[in-house]
Length: 124
Image (cartoon, rainbow, N blue to C red; front, side):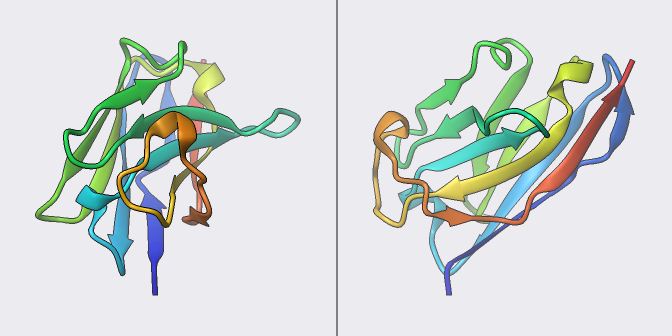
């Protein structure tokens, strides 16, 4: 059974950091694209970051560039999102997701498998 589990969120103050984790079971993460998404009440779900299989090319939203880093630990079958210099606008529920197909590009992925979200709240 293919499952993703996101965890690591919490309540922090602005300028602090968090590291989110996306742990996978039923698949080898190194073979799949993984995306991080943020859902905020009243707003559309937003793609925050993405890492592709193999060479690990990455994508970041404009707001995430320079502050967030996505990475993969193949030994732990886990993808991380390091979130530095957090801002109140980073607040939301963060989800990780993947395409059931292997070796897909971030821009063309069909994210059909989603993990349970983890709440990130950044206070001013």
